[in-house]
Length: 157
Image: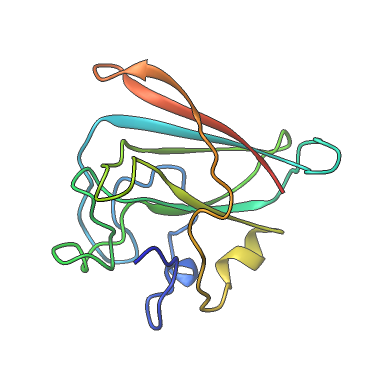
């Protein structure tokens, strides 16, 4: 259930997938994921030199506040919200405007992401299966329920 793509459900080649605000569906689908605001900030750096990696593309996705994954979970198979791609800026950073994900059986709140060499590699990605939890990383959290939260994580690739 934690696959980025599934046969016939590749969201990466859909118009509008490259975006900062991932709370609403796109590419002709309508619907918005409600919840506590969460800014997800990823800093992409080289695993060998720790230097920022500009222009890398990050595909990020997570479940909604009820633990449902758009496209896959009953009730939201007609949505593609909480999925998006961004190109890292000169400092290797991407920020996604989202909502706080739910916990569900056996999992704490979390998000999934993949890093691609560049935007064109990400948005033409073919069908693949990704394993969960290859490296467990904890983001630094700041904020409040009222003001919203920010999760910040440095990603070495």
